[in-house]
Image 1 (cartoon, rainbow, N blue to C red):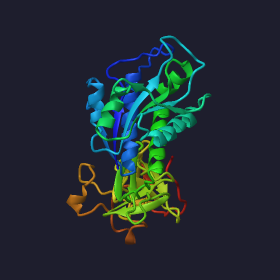
Image 2: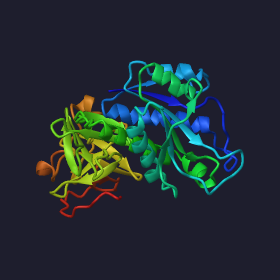
Image 3: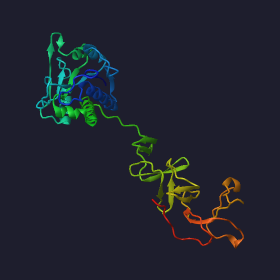
Image 4: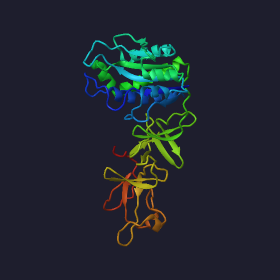
Length: 346
């Protein structure tokens, strides 16, 4: 199916006397872009009568843009004179006088009433002019052989309606509902969405979607490549914090979200050591230095020595410190194993 959408007016046109910030031309431009988004989600092809909001185009020419389409809709809001009138709020579809759009016109007007919760009932109307339809856009659509209607989204001379239409969230609800009723009227099913797979940045963070289900990993570890990640209940990747496993072992998730391994971590001004499997080291650490007292790097001594126990036979002499997870300097080295575990500060 193919639908032509027309945003009524251009630039800043038809300011509300009740709400100075409201312009019919601006509302209809935003609304018809939202309608396009939701109609396309149903697999419906959508064309627009104008490329830019500030561009004008003749009424008849806008209707003729619908050639080859199955339906033409021109979005508007109505007015009662030039002053404020809070008693009139009915939605109406002005349908082509040939009756080709009466059914969908009434369905859309009733949808507007339901979403805006207007006091007055929805209706359809026909206006005849000297050369057929009174409205130029409908004359153009009829000449193109396409059912056409003008959908008036209540009255912007009504203060409550103008305020409602100024809210972007309300316009989104309205466009979604109108797209749904069009799909229902023409018996169009919602296409099954493509299942997501892999990393997606959304809602201020990262999620990892499983291709077999299309759902994100939640409350669980997931290994991507060589790295492990933890995802919370909302499916968001956790980072820059500690996480325990079912055995009570502590792991640190870095800025990238990946579990850190075989490294040192400074956490709240305290130093922690992570083992090769990523778990927090708890036990005795001996650090070897050169003759100046500087720690020797792993490249210089193949690997930093980590010994979880006393020195054998007391033969080796090393400078160092003992730590429970975090490393602190102490005078004098006692080679007594600690059995008490300590969690990192949160």
